[in-house]
Amino acid sequence: MRTKNSFPTKVSLIALTATLLVSPAMAAGNVQEDSVFSTVMVEASPQQVYEAIKMQRQVDPARKQVSYIGAEAVIDENFSGLPVIGSAKCLYKEVESSPRSIEYRLMSSDKFKRFEGCWTLTPMEGGKKTELKLSTYLETGVHVPFARQITNNSVKKDVLRRLGRVKVLAEATTVGINLTHLKATN
Image 1 (cartoon, rainbow, N blue to C red):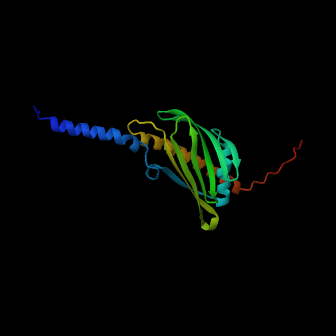
Image 2 (cartoon, rainbow, N blue to C red; image 1 turned 90 degrees about the vertical axis):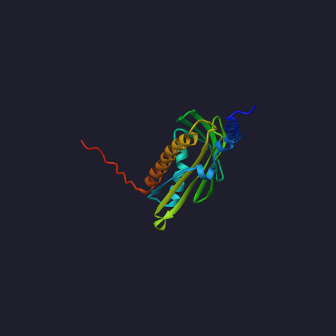
Image 3 (cartoon, rainbow, N blue to C red; image 1 turned 180 degrees about the horizontal axis):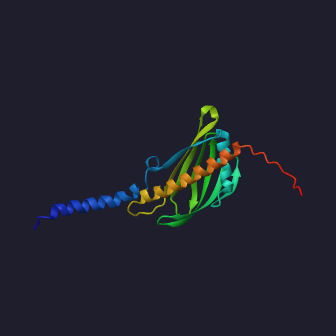
């Protein structure tokens, strides 16, 4: 015997099954579409900005440069205060692929499934300034409602923090400070 609601029930079950089958693929995200990026103008040459990116590996208390061979640095970083997962530890490689680009990619992590991105330097005003762009894609593997939005909001804060640190370091190298030691008089 067929009931009135059997067709909608079958359609709902098919839709639910399809959603469950597709969800893991959708949860993985699309690196191109789901990357977070921001740009800052730095009052320094591209070479100074490039050196500041490398220098920030040494001054960020959450990061530790494990090795640096050729144009590849291995970084050990601890992330804290992350939504849903709390904290994470990861090891990733930064590859200085050109004087205008440094790419990074996850090697291992206790929580992250994917972590990758790129620093891009664009000379401006004849090389006196540099447009610095940082893009990052992070996949935590957490499957909660609005996971992508929550993750990207956290990543955006980190991207802005990193850009700010590099801007300060690069611009500090352009300022010549002349310190004069004065002899104390009695």
